[in-house]
Image (cartoon, rainbow, N blue to C red):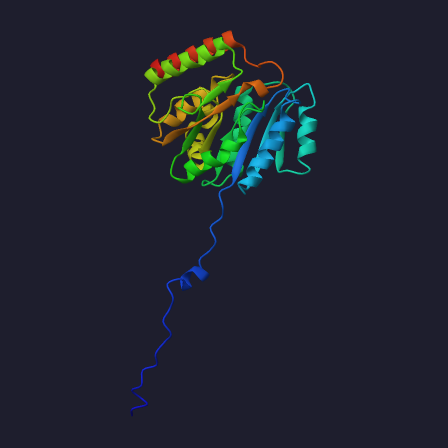
Length: 272
């Protein structure tokens, strides 16, 4: 009878036992979209900096280069670099402008991305520092939806930009901050940003074909204004803009960009 009433003691379980069977959570993937037009001189140093920065931070990534009908060796250089780093090349047979090029890069990224992934947009002229991507990604992982590399934070610096261009950028900043105030945003026109992929996917599903409907440089501002309506969390990091490292002349038609940006402001503010 005593044997029948014996209670077999089970070994005490460790609080860490369940971890042995917990599925490994996949790491966030980084999709870096580069709109490129005649960037044969700037792309090699930029791609090397991206490869070094992502390797140093041990971040999984893929670069999506959209070649916008370049007349130089941009496409050939991308193909050469794709032999030893993860690059996807998208070609436009003719030059279609920054709006279409940015559209195709971002849409390809969110087509391939999981919602928790991070989409980065930056210029292909080597003026943006890819070493900042790790910091921007950490801010996304901490709960932000959009992180902007800003020229208007305390530790920011702008090198090599002509005075009139700096004046125009500053003027645009004040105009848009009054017309479209966004908490956490000072720099509305810098294209170096990190986005939570799920936020872009949500906005793309909402807007459809009109998600990217601006043909020129104003598409950078318009994307921010369209994301504004979803109650997302925005923040900024200081940018050291190295315009002095840029090879070749600017692709921007300043007068046309000013006119188009003001028209966009009126359209979005007053529904014109």
